[in-house]
Length: 274
Image 1 (tube, rainbow, N blue to C red):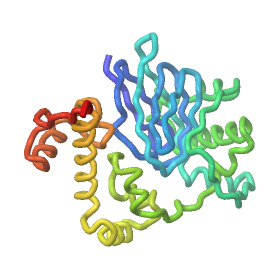
Image 2 (image 1 turned 60 degrees about the vertical axis):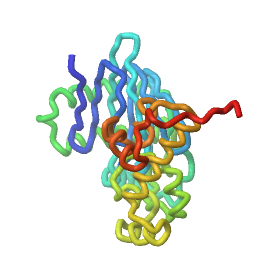
Image 3 (image 1 turned 180 degrees about the vertical axis):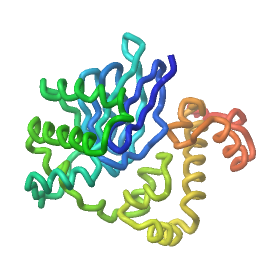
């Protein structure tokens, strides 16, 4: 059976696989509510790592870097269904329900919730939307997304600032931000947005700070980190190339040889006995 990954408009995402796989996308643009139907999702985010178990809900805030690994369960199947809560739909919900959130959200960007019976029934009710997506109108999709938001507010009233704080990311120290996030494989627009800058402002300030272009700096930084892992930690490239933002091993090997003039296999690990 082939793996399935369906992005249904801007409302739902359905994922089903039978092998452990890494998700390619590493930037979460919009708020997500994910329900783990079977297997586990391992999420590696800026503050650490968490595991979404079967039957649990993950509420993830938009505008963040995160990597994920899909792990099938005992039945050799991985299934996860997510509701995408776009800023536009969240604003519409807040406006229709007279919700004004003056409080700036400062908590964690990923929260695991135990679904109540309302939520279990809700996810059962979305299954036909997945199967019959071509017959679903924008209005129907909006109603289902709004229902998810209403259920979240009912389950956890304290989540209002998480959901309805629409402030842009504040401007961060560029050097510290890049050193913390260089390993995420994402377009420059996402680095700019998350650091609280326009793309033009980001590139200009980057050149002033690092005296080079973002693309060149990112590549060099990832390769020097790889060299360190091979030489000091005796790690094998196949164990870490994805963690450092390289898309495939052959791309990593050719970039490494170009920078260091030798292959990873030719690097002698540091002898820690002396």
